[in-house]
Length: 163
Image 1: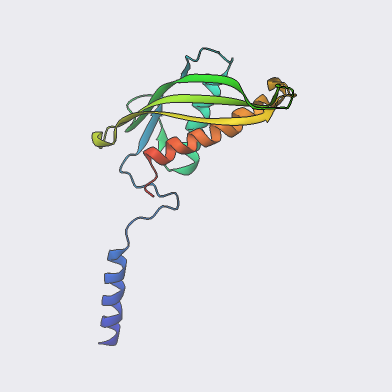
Image 2: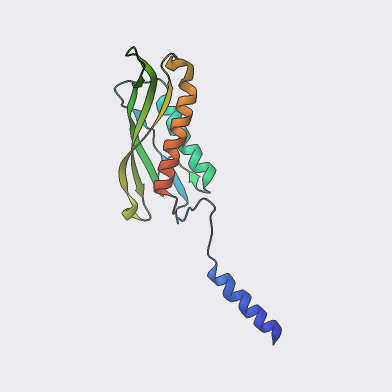
């Protein structure tokens, strides 16, 4: 009788446990597709479109078990880079910029073929501040990496993370 009781408790406990993901992903999708994000910003930075598209694909691949496909994905990401801007952020006493800010914004359209209620279109942006005495070309790689890490994580959280 004692063995039966222990088995019964174990079965009840296991039924209460559903699939768990440390990233919070809870989807029935098996595949995703990331279409090429064209750079339509007024200032066009060469290669930015490829870099961003790859960064989004890599993040989803690394944080989920979804398969990347080139067409007919259960989840579809598409959009365009709509802003690439450098602006002065703070001034010195002699009215010159002390710090500049690079801002990149991406417009994303997300389609969930399993649950169309999750579909949306939204703009995601982030920035990188650097000293005005520094040329953008010297910090460009670090700036792009940091901005894309933040934007892709925000997109991931909005589309797949159920926190």
